Amino acid sequence: MTQQSLQDRPRLVGDIGGTNARFAWQAHARAPLECVETLPCQDYPQLQQAVEAYLARIARPHPEQAALGLANPVTGDWIQMTNNHWSFSTEQLRQALHLRTLAIYNDFSALALALPSLRADELLHLGGGPALPEAARALIGPGTGLGVSGLLPQAGGGWQALASEGGHATLCASTEREWRVLAQLQHRFGHASAERVVSGPGLVWTYEALCALDDAPVRFTEPPALTDAALLGHDAHAKEALALFFGFLGAMAGNLALTLGARGGVYLGGGVLPRLSQALQQSTFMERFLAKGRMRPLLETMPVYLITAEESPALRGMAQALA
Image (tube, rainbow, N blue to C red; front, side):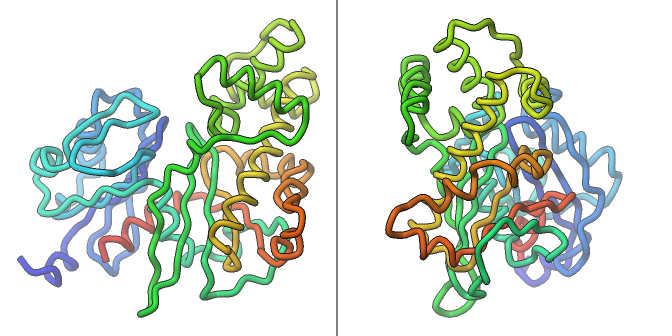
């Protein structure tokens, strides 16, 4: 079967995180995405069973090809997911699902491919700008982990998405309090990476580090309850943990913007931030993003956006990858 004929046949696209797996079905390459559903990863022993359950629920013609973005490094046939229990061989999964082709991407590479398709009403402008349309774009966002990617223009046209694990880069502190928190995290985990603070679980770990530093009781063990307490001002350490979360995110986003020369924009994705948009705007995020000494004027030219699209844009990115 030729590539052109495959473009006319049904396709499956997916965005697989540490907590949830999102899927969509597409009748052909030019068709809209349909049957968008989210399945909890913990409900299925492996990815194969999650895909089979989704396809059984939608009762549409079986896809001929699929593209899946995973919150994980993609370096070969064998995938062992970092933040959930799934592991698999890409080729064995392709055969088990009766697919002609199966493409696996890092989830933030998938989201990066969707950046050009985002509409103005799917973005919240946080500062900077205007964007240079043909310049590099940076992407970072907390979820179960911390996703990092970027989109680079190609000489012949089009874009190249970066496959990155920048969320595991070593985190640096700017204040004495931050240094003490990072020391706690390094003692606990052996390495104080960015996602040990800037992620859903990282918010809890930061809160626990603050409680340990002040010899205070730990009242929250789950991100939603901790976040609610922080936003309502019901717990001082929860509030401080959220403030550190935003500050470190701003510092990491600024680092990424300078590394890529992201005059095309800096995009904040992931599953955590859209629910915290008001707190994000009131936080030190933008100040920490800009606080790069002599490079502040350059960063002030770079627009920063929060992705607010209701449907996972990474699904569009995977459809684009198949095209």
